[in-house]
Length: 200
Length: 200
Image 1: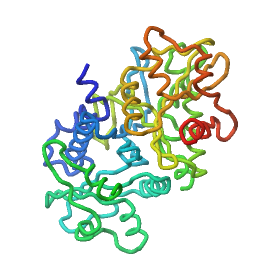
Image 2 (image 1 turned 90 degrees about the horizontal axis):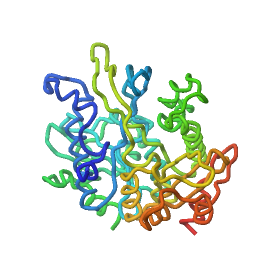
Image 3 (image 1 turned 30 degrees about the horizontal axis):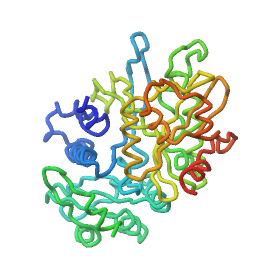
Image 4 (image 1 turned 90 degrees about the vertical axis):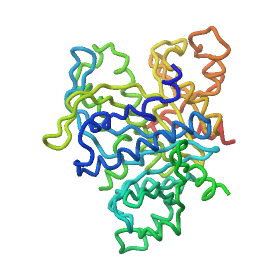
């Protein structure tokens, strides 16, 4: 049971979509949904590690599924359903008594983070989180340069509100955020940056 | 778009399972899963109301779904999948800078709340939430007497640890918790009890 305890559903693989999509040829698949898979799994592992070390309690929210048809003849077997977009962010939890809420995004550009990656409802959600005293941020992975950044959501929101530009230059991300230290465990050490940006 | 904004997916109906199960004759259906439907929807409405009034940001975590088969011929259509049990609680969010985490349960007994309603992994999760400074509680609806109670998770955990008994007598729930005020909006006014129990 300890494996179940340390890696409950929603935290650690089996990641539902991935278990299927991993069987597909990854590099030949151009869909955006697939590009995020490894990053998401690694963040899930980071969270499982933090949980195991009792540093915070952060989970990925399960992917919302729109269910259309269920067969109840033997238990409940879903026969037709569709993936839905998360209307909040993917991750939230508690750290040092504070509410954490963040989104993890990957982008291929070497020079900037395109803001079309962040749907309007996520921005609204993060604004509310900040207004209610929560800690809100993004983890942005620039896959082409193999660098991952921690960026406070407040910066991204004010960048959006300043108008006009459709992407945040990577130098602005570097200046207003911080590079996430990568390692084996934790894979992405974002908690130390929560300390630096919000709790010092 | 304002309707989408106020009632994002996962907060307000369309509740996925319900939209299907509601078509079934409710009173003839003995499954436990169905008994919780109205209560859950009402709590979702309560949360949507609180969100609209900008009092807190609390969402139901989407139900985890185990996906077995996906047809990618036209988009991604899930062809076989199963409901999974939430390994955390159903609800979490932020209120007055604090992390909130709670579970809503219904029971039919007039005299006590059976603890088999609370899986071990939820207890472990709530223990961690408390250890990390979060606010953790249960909303327990006794359907037979039409009364709903707010009960701090710390009490339920200590009751479990005191051993032996398999259900909490309703009088103990009354003594260690508080009756939730019911109304139109909010349907269940649990935030005032968060204030009373945790923030005063």
